[in-house]
Image (cartoon, rainbow, N blue to C red):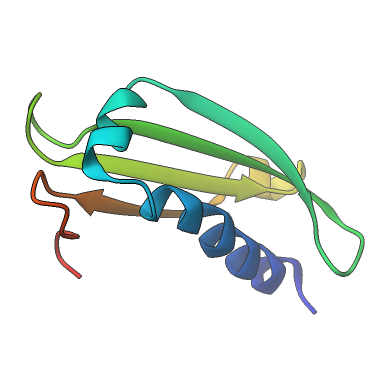
Amino acid sequence: MGKMIEAKMILPERLKRFREHSYEKLVQLIGSHETEEARAPSGKRYQLEFQVFWDSRPGGDVRVTGSIDDGGIRAIFPVTDDFIKAPDGTFVDE
């Protein structure tokens, strides 16, 4: 399995836990920057980073971004994914 395919499988799985948070919980995480490591089935190690911030203005939508890289060229061009949650708890543009 290629590195890109592995990364594209791991990132959504890890981002899912943020998607499960309520809007209020995400607001509490604004400004946070979390990092973690994951090991793929191939044994390859990946570094993941997650950030939570206001999408356009305080009190509005919250954006959560995630990126994953393997420390090689992927560190320069990481695989990324994100989502936006509105104050009513719905996902924007999904």
